[in-house]
Amino acid sequence: MRCVSPRTAVGFLALAITCSALAQQAPREEGAAAGGEAPPRAMVAPLAFKVDWVRPPSQENTKVRYTPVQENVGDPNVEMKYYGAAKQILTTGAPGNALTPYGVWSGTAPAPFAMTFRLKDSYIDLTGLATIRWFTKTSGFHVVRPVVKLANGNMLVGDAEFSSITMLTQSQFSLASVHWIKLDPEKVVTLNSGRAAANPNGEIWVPNPDLSKVDEIGFADLIPGSGHGTGGWIQLGGIEVYGKSVPRN
Image (tube, rainbow, N blue to C red; front, top):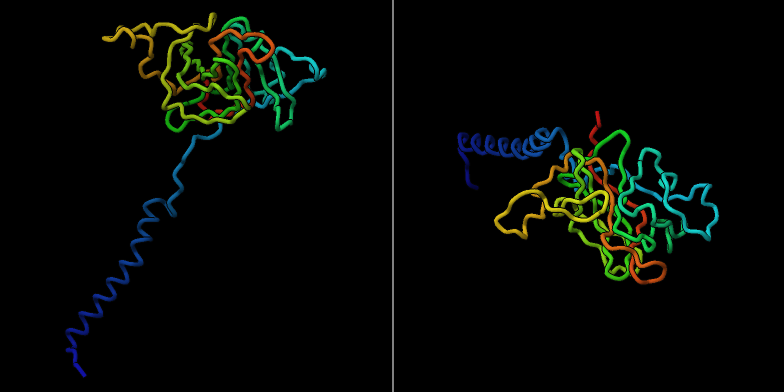
């Protein structure tokens, strides 16, 4: 049997104790640095508000399509705003019906329009992980696009496009990847950004718009509707906006 000197045995024992202490200490130090267990990384911003379309008592005749009114928005803290021909679009579908859910339809709009929503007491910070989720359906060459109205009053329309959708489909997109063009709130047509650019074709894009305080958020159709039937229109169901609420005061 091989003998080990007392000095060597003490060295082995000290090394074993040190390794054991480090093995136990490392996880504890990592947890302490994070204030306990490391929290899961956020993958999406919090829900700021949602638009659930409802049918008020004034629209009890289910065979009639009505101009959408404030009472069609389920949350009383969410205000609806009209631009362009938005007051000439109609409600459609049936509340609670999974196949044909309630929403709005633009075939009767004789000109471009935008419809937006705002929280009465808050702006929305649409930077970072902010996203929008909505149900859309389109016909013809019509496209659903996001619209924002900033705290300074400027309206912008984004290049995120939702088109050629023959069934009401849920989509979610990040605001961080959207490029914006200034929008005329009366005619709902795109405008020059007001800046000079080396490439004249680039003058229309708004450079680095401040989305940290957004007053209104909604959607637009930049093509007039073709009337009833399948010619050309957009249909929009529920909307969810994910972003941080910022007090208005």
